[in-house]
Length: 318
Length: 242
Image (tube, each protein chain N blue to C red):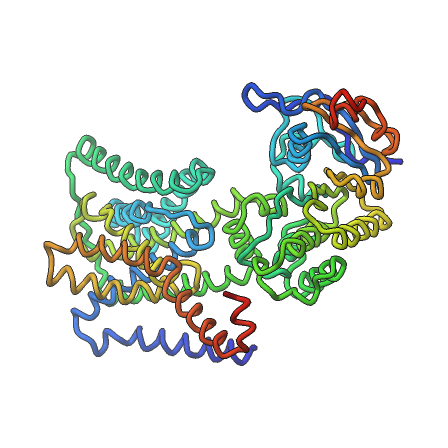
């Protein structure tokens, strides 16, 4: 058991080191690509952290992503960079706590709609503030951060998020989440503080997503609400996590990598049809792989092993 | 005998419907009491108010002298109340052992890891499910899910155990086993409040019964007396039989 863990740890570190060395031998385009991909890996994993077990489908991803980016644009000239990131995380946390306290009692489709509305609300508020108070819609971000620097930060955040997600899965908090996902009534009658658990996970997930927005912000140089609060970000994150399987540790990552590459290729080659194709892929994933690729593979494997077992057993399971 | 649970003047209204009307009764430590009544008389609503699923509209529910009405279920659970549900509620994506470990991890003792696993297996042993500990809860049969639900409630080591029609839907052999199981809990001194329709089980298990009809208490006393009470007979069978 511990040997297996050690093997995993070594593999994980080796992979991380290889990825960190990437900018040394790959070109500028590869780094740009990896920044986008790593950002989505982190967001999809963070999304799965909360939405996978609780089955609360959140479309608020871009609200936090944008809050991160905007915090950086506002504070980048008054605070040192590290403090800007801390401030962004704190702003994300504060918003998540307020929103979470107000909405995590909503169930099912109401939460989906609320979370979507939240992202729009934040975008409209920022737009209103910029137009009426500061008098300018866009903001410039001049930070001495190189693309490699951004990539390394995102890679670190990705590693931390996956480690964290792994640790939660093995903790009491992880069990609480699974129980809540199965049956909230049982959860509360077993002594689980449902609102507290949801709020904690929602906040953690939101802070991570906020950090992605904050770290990526310098890439744009110029930002405005329609760029950083683009709802497509929320949908992409969702669809990536669903493709891989939001309930599994590696699921969101496995969904994010191929889909990011696919969307990158589509937007380069079919810029006009991109939204239509995106919608079709979304529908296909929900219909064909509702529980994600990993779950589908597991079902296939278990079916195959059931077929090998005595006929009586497979009859009984059918 | 010390009083574990006392309801006084409990009323629950759902809009215009008064489901429970000015209900009072108490339960002593170590007692097994039946809560009876025709369908729709408000029994499950009473259970739900004790476990915190509903807050009463009026009245006081005291657990060991401390008012608990209106607290959320997780707080009441941590104060020592555990329950089973009228319709079995398994946690389908967890294993049987994990179902029980849930009550251990978040209950009063906060057991986790191998200690929780050991306790869970012990409680599964009690209900006769130990050999199925690692199966998915959704793969169990109905009676086994009921057993698992009881093991989960027992794992909380409750001061007060609420069983909501736990014996309903069992065949005669299973009923026998179920009654023996509850008896063994009684011998260990667990205080139990059970809602039940199976008269054989009520006679075998409950020293005392409270009978409700249309939200009101119509009888409270030793089981044999209560079941002979004309009001109770009338509530169940109509005027002709009273």
